[in-house]
Image (cartoon, rainbow, N blue to C red; front, side, top):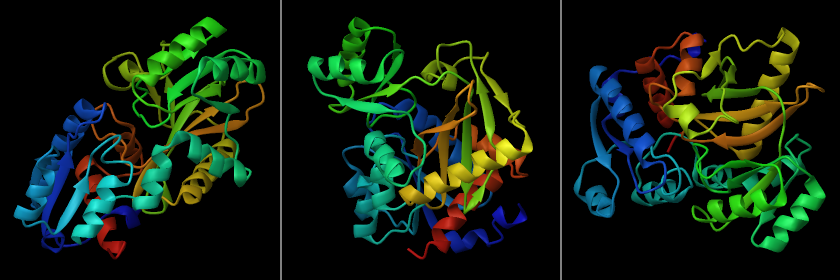
Length: 315
């Protein structure tokens, strides 16, 4: 994994703006991620400064000298292609995926449709826009199911449901976050997450939680969440998981760095793709830094490697 280390002089990066905060439902997580990334860059000697992205961002973009942007905006407004498009119009190179891959990965429904078209396994699902859709989905998919806002991350607005009344209530609750709501077949079994960095698949992480699923509290607040590295799979299964996640990210077109979330059916052993995160969390509870450590990179080295990839992209 030595190729993942940045060997550039930090002066090559120029003046780096770390973009964090924003106005999405994941603002609080993004603030923590951004401060961690900014601290790592400054400690490494990079000429970096932070911008809490708000309504004045376009003015800041015009008034500041910015040679490169490190995007740590989670969710809509930062991870969905809009920030990437703005930076490209301004001629500012940035970390992570481009406009199309960012927009596609942020849309869970469209991502699943792309995977299905390529024969990649993802749980059966349906889009919900009305009570009638809830009844149709229940008939087609059965129970239990999991309801998700199609364009949110960090498990915000998600709920497991076991009957039609719960499904309708969960759809209404998720609709408060997003006009497009996805319902998905519940997969009973272990969950894994696989980080990708500059074309390399990092060691998978097995996740365990006493919660119903790996929800917001389990991700960022709880002290009883379990992280398994090594992930607990045998060598053949782990390689199959890594290969599947590489295919899944390639299908979406991600570059630089990303994280793919996967469930495994406890009975059949089948892996099921859930989603791709193109700007994963970088907090003290976050998964990409854990995977990077297992691959031999500390947090600062990870941050520099992600930034280095923005130079390789040739933007």
